[in-house]
Image (cartoon, rainbow, N blue to C red; front, side, top):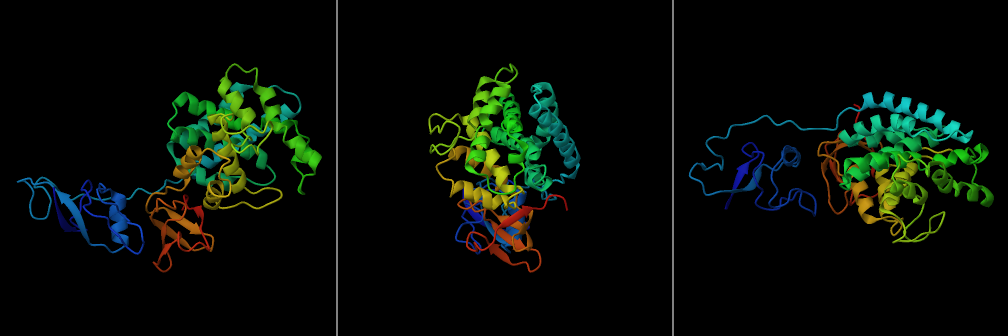
Amino acid sequence: MEAINVTLNELRIGKVIAEDIYANSPYPIVLKNTKVTSEHLHVLKAFHIFKIPILIENDPKTNKGGQTVEETSEVIQIQLPPVVDRFEKNYRDAVEEFKKLFNGWGGGTKVDITKVRGVILPLVEKVLEDRTIIFNLNSYSNAKDYLYHHCIATGLISAAITQKLGYERGYILQMAIAGTLADSGMSKVPLRIREKKEPLNAMEFEEVRKHPTYSFQMIKSLPAIKEEMKEAIHQHHERLDGSGYPDKFRIGQVSNYAQIIAVADTFHAMTSERLYRSKESPFKVIEMIKESEFGKFDIKVVQALIDLVAALPIGTKIELTNLERGEVMFINKFAPTRPLIKLSTTGEIVDLSKNRSFYISRVITNE
C-alpha cells in the first residue's frame, strides 16, 4: 500500500490512517493504522488538522485523490449520549418499591425473590442498552434514602460490569440481583446506627460489619439464586489484601463475582451524597479506586469500570469541577479519566492529564 495526503473534506469513513497524528498533546490523537470513524472526523476538525495521511491500495479504479470511482460523499452524524430522563421515573418507582421490601425484611419478612426480580430487572435492561445511565445514578440519590438507592444502583452497576467482562446473559442478570441484595442485611442493623450522622463507635462499626453475614443468612436457602452469587453476597466487603470483612479473606479466597459487587458498591458509595459526607466526582473516584485503593480490587474488574465510565465518546458534553463546560476531544489511553477537553466558552483545548487541579465533575446527558 502507498500513503497519500488527503484533505479533511476528502477523507472518508473506513479509510486507514498512514501515520500517527499529533496535535497539542504528547500522545497521538489518532494512531497509525486506525480505521477512520465519524468520531475521528470530529476530532480532526476540532484540532484544525486538514491534511491527513491515509493508505491507498494500488487499484486502477483509484483516482489521484485516493477515492474510488464508486465512492460518493456521505453525511456524517456524530452520535452523542442519548437523553436518559425517561429512565428516572422508573428508577425512582423501583427505589420506593425496594424501600418497602427492605423495611419488611427489618421486621422479619422473608426475601421474596420474585418481587426483587420485578424491581431490578426492568432497570437492568435499560442500563445494558445505554451505559450513560450510570452517570446519573448518583444524582438521583439523596442522603436520607441513600441505602435504598445504593442497593438498586449497586445491582445495576454490577450487571454493567459483568456484561463488560464478557459473561453470558444469565450471569449478568444474576449479578444484578446479587448486587441488589448484597446490603439486604443492613435491614437487620439498628436504625439508630444506620442513620447516625456522627462517626460510628467501635461497637456500632462492628455491628455494621456483620451485614454481609446477615445478607447471606437471608438468601442462603433461596433456590433461585446461584450458589456463586450467594458466596459473592457474603464476600462483597472482602479485599484482596486481607483488609476486608467479615473473614479477612485474601487474594485466591475472594470470588470474582464478589469482586464485581465490591467495585460497584465502592464506586456508587463514594460518588453519592451521604449523611456524613458529600459526594465525589465519578472520575475522581475511579482514580482513587485505581491508585489509592490499589491491591484491594481485581484490576480486571477495575478496568471494566473504567471502560464503562471513563471511555467517553468524542463530543460528549461534560462539566469540570471549576464549573466550566466543554466537550471531550480525545481520550488518552494512559489517563482515561483525564481526556483532552475543548472549553465551550473560549474554545481552548485543555489536557486534564497535565492540568490536575480540576477534573470532570459530571457528564451532561440531559441537555
